[in-house]
Length: 146
Image 1 (tube, rainbow, N blue to C red):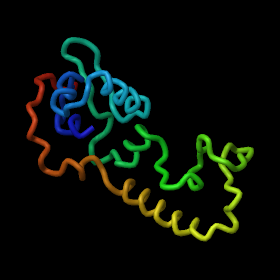
Image 2 (image 1 turned 90 degrees about the vertical axis):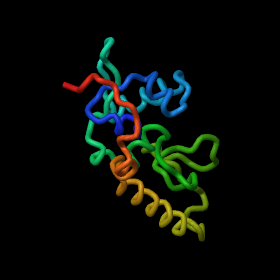
Image 3 (image 1 turned 60 degrees about the vertical axis):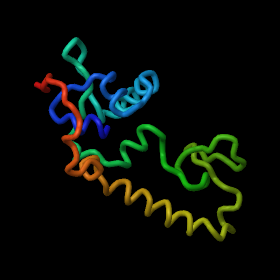
Image 4 (image 1 turned 135 degrees about the vertical axis):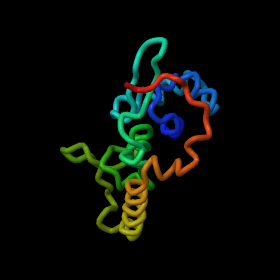
């Protein structure tokens, strides 16, 4: 995402991203696929094609990127609205995990505050914040987005 943001207004082939970011090409294909499914990146096929940001960097929250790639961020298994794999407890009708110690757990509120703070920070920062003014450091391809 950082690489695509630096290539403002251009299509960027995966090979260039792979080389510039030192990410194995096969792994990068999996990453880009997840980002594309969440409408964070778009693609143009063909010789002059490549990938591009689907929205302006200032409109893409870091939380969106992380959730697209990793799923819901969770510090402890009893907080997210997902069913933890291999975790003991009961599952509600809505598919949410219910910890058997929830009512007597002394640390749940502590973890909830930290989780909420983490999500708040991730959702307050944008891709534009991440790249700052150093976005012109990479060589850019010549194909402009039309």
